[in-house]
Length: 375
Image (spheres, rainbow, N blue to C red):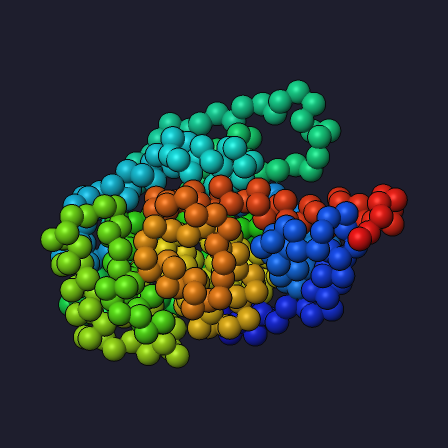
C-alpha cells in the first residue's frame, strides 16, 4: 500500500502553473501585489493540474494522538495521562482546536494511534440544527457545528519505547502507523474534504520531533530542539542531551525514512507522514500545523520528494526546529503568531488565507472584463 501510494505522487503540473501565472497577470491588480498568495495559488493549480484550482473547502482536521516512552526521561513536566485527557476534551468540543474548527467550518477527527492510558468516554455532544437558510448559502461543509468530533481507534501500540534506550518502534509498527495515516487521508477525501489539516496530541512529542528534524536535515540537536510546553533551562538542556544521545545511539539514515521513524519517531509523527503521502497521491493539499507536522513532513518528503507539492505551511511555530524543517522543505509559512500549541490550531487560523488565495483566481475580474485600463 505504501509503494502504491508513493508511486501515485507526481510532480506539479507545469501547464496549470503557467496558466495560473498568466491569469494573475490579467487580473485587476498590480502584478505581484498579493505577494505569497499569488505563489500559493500557482502551487495549488500545479497540484490540482487545473487553473483555477478547486476552492479548498470543505476542510477536515485529522488529530493523531500517541504517547512516548522518552517521557520517562523527564523531558516535560506534564504527566502522560494528559494525552488521553485532552482527547476527551477534543471529543467534548472544549479545546482550542474545536473553537477554531467551528470558526472555520472544519470537521475534526481524532485518531488514536498509540495513546498509553485509557481514553475517557465523554457524554455525546448533540449536533445543533443548521442556521436558517444555511443550506442555500453554499455547499454542505462538514463542521463541528453540525457534527460532533469523532474518534478513530487505530492504536498500533500503547505508546512508543524510550528512544534514548532503544528504537522507539519496530519497522512494522512504524509502517502500520504510516499506513493508518494514508487510510485516514483516503477516508476524509472520499467523504468530501478538499483540504486536509494536520493535528497532533502527545505529551513529550516535541522530543521525537526534534530528533526527526535533526536526522532528516543534519541540524545540530540544539538548533532542532525547543522548549515544548515551556520547560525551564535545566530541563531544556537535558532535553537537548537526550536528543543528541538518541541520534548518536541510532545513527538514523535519512535515506531510509521508515528506519528514521522507527528509531526516533512517534506513532503520531509516522501517521502524519502517511496522511501527507495519502493526500499528495490524491492531489489534495495538506495544510501543515506546527513542529510535529513539519517533522512528519520531512519523513513524507523522504518517502516521496514530490509530496512537497501538496504541502502548505500554515504557520511558523515558536519551536526553532520548525523553522529548520520549513527551510529544508523550501516552504514559506503563511502566518507567524508565535504559536506552539499544536492540535491543528495554527493550520486552522491559516485556512482562510489558503482559501482566499484560490478565490482570487475564481472571482477577480480581468482588466478586459472589468473595463479597467492597464498601465
